Length: 422
Image 1 (spheres, rainbow, N blue to C red):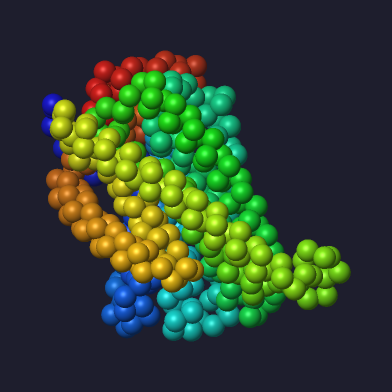
Image 2: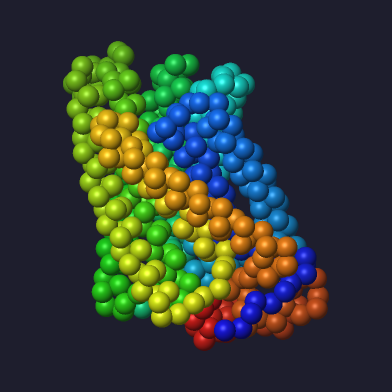
């Protein structure tokens, strides 16, 4: 197994992939877990930890966004290469999901707990949420369309990373419902719109996710477990199942507050019991999704154990893909406890939140060490492409004209297949 290549600052920027935004997703999940931890809830200590992780996440998000913007402006050909890559392009979904965690913590901690900024701050977060919805819609519809029309996919090499573009709608949905409740006190009309859009998004996101999970299960049965570091993606299914279950819990709780709609002549929207009925249905669906998430958790643990026994693989940025799904599962479990008042979910949710925090510490420490030495910056979509000594990619052999781009993509894909650890 070859050691990773040490890179200077220029090469590090060239190899700064969208997968880095998985760090924002994972760090944001830890912040959310501190904000909602079932023991010492709403204590100043927990709020302080949640705020600390929020500001760390915010700084990282801004830095990653600036580096990414510079990367694609300075080396514009990389965008075309990356968007055609059947794996790297899917990590674009990490950008809106990382931003959504910032919005959620901003509402729960800074506005709801401390009253920071008043209505102006809340509506600023609402505006950011609408922007996040637009970016998520681009990921769900356009990026999935690119998978249909531009990229080449093979069932035998499929991983659950296929879920990343569609999970964006589920994460944006839960963030929308988090916003809807405090907005209701200011404007029921705006809250109703936010709730309806959130229901629309979670319906589409969950439907697509369940379709992809069915294909993924078939792939595992026919072709076996993913090899090498790809086995880490086995935790990704916890994301859509756990987050959609959490979103449904919030939707049910919001409906008990929002229904009946004032002035509505509809027997559904104006019904006195509509909110309670929807809440019961949402809790049942949430428990169903928690059971599915637990099933995928067991499959993931067994898969990782099996692959690790056969081989070892180096640490890479996609390892961050473990943090957010596990954090989502813990948060979902904790909120089921709050909905049912069953002690099992409280204990298991708190324990799993602690495990997720420990996992974050290990992965963060490894990342800091490798960033310091420049070893972790790798873009698989650029493998086999000679970047040359020039500052940009234009004019470099293999990228001088658009007609030669597919050959470069094919060469990069062939090189990736030859190295199974990447």
